[in-house]
Amino acid sequence: MAYGTYRGFFRPEWAGPLAKVLVLLLVGYGLYQNRHLKSLYLVLLGLFLNTLVIFANGGHMPVSLETLRRAGIEGWEELLRNKGDAVHTLLDESTRLPFLGDVIPLPPLRKAASLGDLFILAGIAGVVVEGALRAGGRRLPRRQAALRVLAFLLLVFLLLALRI
Image (cartoon, rainbow, N blue to C red; front, side, top):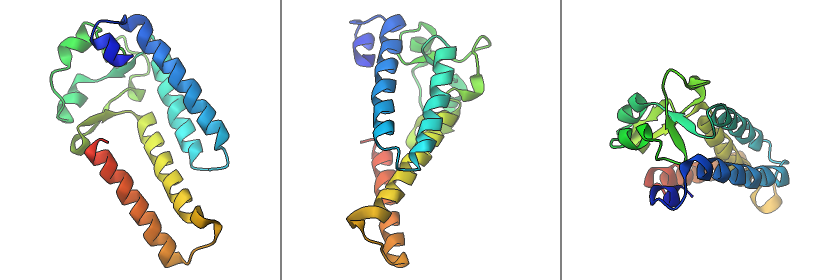
C-alpha cells in the first residue's frame, strides 16, 4: 500500500489506515496463536503503544524531522509536509501523544524508532532467546544455552543491520 501510495495508485488518507488495520489483525492473530511465548507480551505492549499514537493522529505515525536528521535520513521533509506518505506524518504542535511517535534516532541503522518499536524489538529478541532455549525440546547445559542465545541474537542484529 505504501508503494502504491508513493506511485499515486492509492490515496494516503485511506490506504495508510487500511494497511495498518490489516497488519494489526494479522499480527494480533499471530500473537494470539503464540501466546505461550512470554516475550510476545512485550511485542503486544509495543504494538499497543504504536496503535495508540497512530489512531490518535488520524492513522499515521508522527515522525520528527530532527530525529530523521539525527538518524542520518534526509529527503523526507517535502513528502511529509505534503502528506504524501501513507505511513507517517510530520510531528508538529498539533500532534497528539508526540512522545510515542518516531522520536528516537537510531543512527547505526539509519532508522527513526518509537517507544513501541523498542518494546517490539525487545520482545522479538526475547522470543529468539526463548526459541533458542527450547530448541529440540530438551534442557541444554547453561554454557551451550548461552552460546545458542548469543548466536541467535547476533543473527537478528546482523539481519537488522543489513536491513533484510
